[in-house]
Image (cartoon, rainbow, N blue to C red; front, side, top):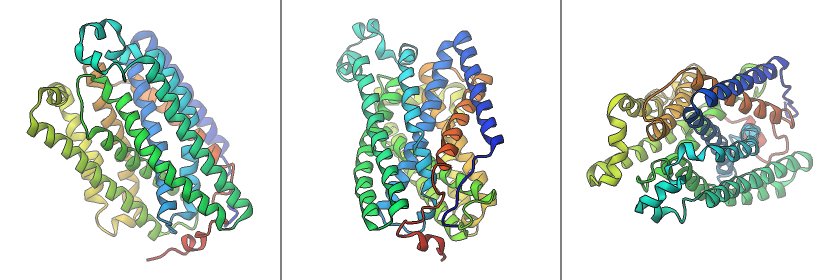
Length: 387
């Protein structure tokens, strides 16, 4: 059990290659037929999976700082998810080729005639935008790889020194990622509507990353258990995973309501423009769909104790949360870039391509180390966790 090793199924690897191929073909056709829509999909899917990876890294950091024992047996999963960040960095650098299709502030002629964009151009300009992408990903990759290295050293040598080092690194990471991912959300999403601003937006997107990252961790744990791995998993572990999803759904709902309520009450045109553009026409339903998927369903169905320990309930809720994150990002990006709802083979194919890449990275890194960290100081507490 302690030396449990994950073996990548050949069929699963072939499936991921197939999904990646579908994504490449979808984007190729998209860039040929509708470049603006293709770049919007590229941004959405990039941000979707980066937020999950960052949320997973934040999850494991919180476990170290809180000295949580229950989750020790499952820390390889968020470690493997965080390993996606170097690949995402390359993909986001490629996004620079599509900046003019997405961001109004990147057009010199718009800057020349718009005083507000001129005022923001000290921050919103292409060279500084590119530098920030490199800086943010550089920090995330450096810290997550360092944490992974220390984790593997703990596996090899044992002792408390490596755990204490991981705890110190986690304290640094949560501070860095809280600031940098908030700024990253402003750069990638809020600046799509350069005239609009919200002081709550960055915090809401950070909570969303943590919420959906925790949900995907839970889903991967359940899938591994179904196929014979992580047999230490019990109903008490499921309950603790569920409490994260339940709590974060409440926090997500709070920030979503706070942003809406303050903008509605203030009634300032520069702020209300965000909702005005999204409530008229077909985008209006997405506002309610996002609330139902990201808050109402997890809040309602994960509240009962019996449900919080049932995989039959948890898996459908997680799937709906994953759809909810897509709806949330679609609601942010499409009204600002495409200006009309479009959903078809391009959206489905591009998302599947990113699913394939993310899955391939995760399963590859899961196979590189013992699935259960045998020398973690809290491993026995995790294995025998019951309440």
